[in-house]
Length: 175
Image (cartoon, rainbow, N blue to C red; front, side, top):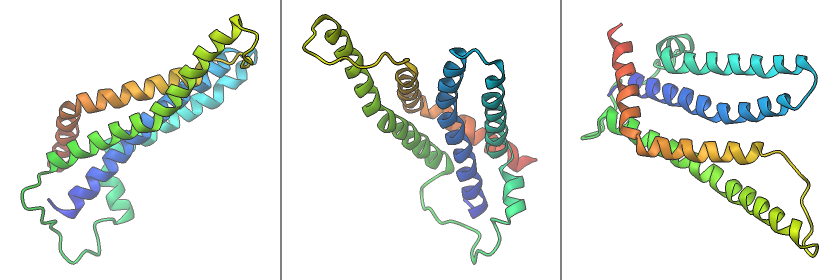
């Protein structure tokens, strides 16, 4: 594996992570706008969505142009990375597993808190002893559920993601 391959892999993984992190947040923005009467509010999230998708697509599908533009492969003494038995597919699978785990770890505690508040609020309605929470929308709850499910999807399907990312990497090398 060359250092350029490693940089290409890191850039692609940054694109996947940026895409996966931004989509649940955008769901919350669209849910907020759906409750509003002003139709102009939809323009800002659409602009953010287009920018995020464009940036993620650039990172995932055009890492070589980013490497050339920033000259990220210049200035190394040795071009090869000596990883005795470690192949690029193994690195990709480890990275996908780590990203999936990060999604779960990042969202599981807020999900449990949101579910606890919903259960507590349902109990508090029937018993005046408990203070009641304000009626809030379920956007954070759905966002956290989506992120936990996304993390589980990445962990359970890491081999498919590895083959997809490795295939894109070999396609870029042949061009």
